[in-house]
Picture 1: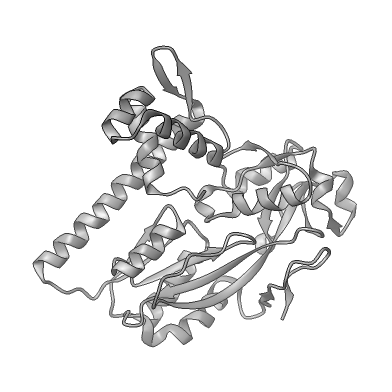
Picture 2: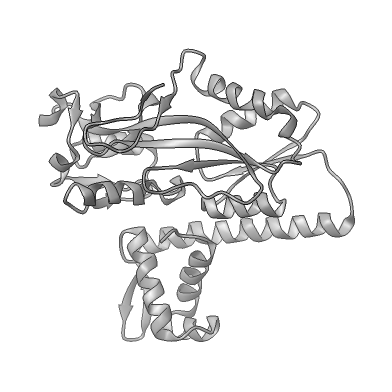
Amino acid sequence: MELGLRHLRVVVAVAEAGSVSRAASILRIAQPGLTAQLGRIEREFGAPLFVRRPQGVEPTELGTQVLLGARAVIAGFEDLVATARRKAHSGGSTTAVRLGGVDSPWIPAVASVLRGLLPGHEQITYVEDSPEEVVELVRAGGLDLAVITEFPDVPAPTGHRLVVREVDVEPLLVGLRADHPDAARDRVRLADLAGHDWIAPPDRAGGLRRSLRTACERAGFLPRFRHFGVDQRTAATIVASGTAVGLFPAHTGQLPGVVFRTLVDEPLWCRTSLLWQPGSPVAGVADELAGAVVDERFGRRHQPFRVVDRVPGDYPRAG
């Protein structure tokens, strides 16, 4: 299941109602159905969001964090819809280019290149909750350009009559403490990490957590996600302390106390693409944009990777 805006609305409704039964009445959903849906949402987050008590429910520590983010996301989306409707009803036009995507280091690179290619256009950037919402906004005309990501076993959503242009494929490496027994190897088997706690990739990564979970299941175990909502710097600190292992993009560079190793049997990668409508303001600069974005982020010496069919021991390789 991919978490989306409707799931966040469910979490907020349960918190505000104080019980699943009252929330079911407000949402006009049968209580057993809402209970099952909430259970699926909590499994996707990796831990309970509420503590069930006789008098109702109370948010857990993770639930409180999720609620803060959920309310911000919902408010932002509602503001976007209201702004778009006002613009549509006013009949006015704008030279703004609207860029969107899930939280990704590629977004600032794309934004920088766009400013150079379209200097006469104002630029507005939206960070959305899920790739599905981003694609829907492009399809509905709410975004002129989107940055979408794809991971193994989690294909990126696409829309009918939308243009998709691949930008880059980055390998993802496992981060280990520098004195970890496997740190002496150049390549590590995912199955050898079955006994470790993991840093959970953020849900806003667009499916990376599900991709990692699927890869671990194929390797014969379920990953123990014990650290949630941490940024890359915090994740590196946790790995260096020996508390857990985590995934990092290959371009991360050196981090104190952390080494990065290739996964042999279950290689993981991230494909980044640009998405737009044929009539978008960016359509005329799309070819130049795709190449310039890689130069902006990595420099001209960056070598792209090509995703190959998954074969044990194989890996996305330069192509």
